[in-house]
Amino acid sequence: MAKYFIAFLLVVSSVYGQQPESDCPEKNGVFADSLQCDRYYECENFVLSEKLCDDGLVFADLGANSGIGGRCDFPFNVDCTGRAELQPANATANCPRQNGYFAHSDPTICNQFFFCSSGQANLITCPDGLVFNPNTGTCSWPGEANRIGCQSKDVVAFDCPARVLEAEPTGPQFIDPLYADPTDCQYFYVCIGGKEPRRNGCTTGLVFNDLTKRCDRPRNVPDCVDWYKTSEGDLLEPDVLEEEIVPAPKRTNIAGRS
Image (tube, rainbow, N blue to C red; front, side):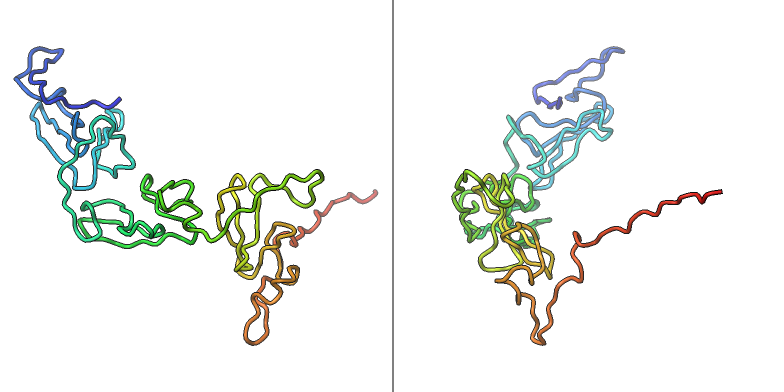
């Protein structure tokens, strides 16, 4: 459990006797402030020093067993419940605070964000189909980031078809069904729970086979036969698929008759 420094504690005692008057709850250590998440206190031989994390970072009380007591970290790694106060922000261009991960100022741009270090902004673009997740400081699927205006319907040009329950279904059945990307043979969509589309792709040289629901050779998918054909007429596809690799049979050593 985190130990919070309470400003009105003025005197502490030791099991070995009365110590000189001090605001330190212990002789040595670092302690989170009880109200402000980016402020903490360091005690050395009962001498108190008040400290602030760099703008954009907050203090994480790691406990005495951690060996370091605590450290300044990004807000998404720290629980600031009950001590939400922060130092005044020192904003710069594209950086609401000097340090941290921040969404693009344009709310319609979901797949880009800024990593700020000492007020210097670095623009980062998420891989196709992902959006910035401010809860983790990383790129996530839209449903995981759960940002207003950045849901799957806002960033993915594909709607999962309504699922129809068949009395005698044919072909592979999936809890999260797969559908070919109608604009690109190499890609397909996984519909999580049949509703949220996530775009995935086959290895370069392969295309998605909507009948088998697997990545396959272009020659096996009529609409994608020429997908990788070059200007010289050559097809760029792997020499062999993984499932076509058959291991050699094990040799059995049979002792000869004497």
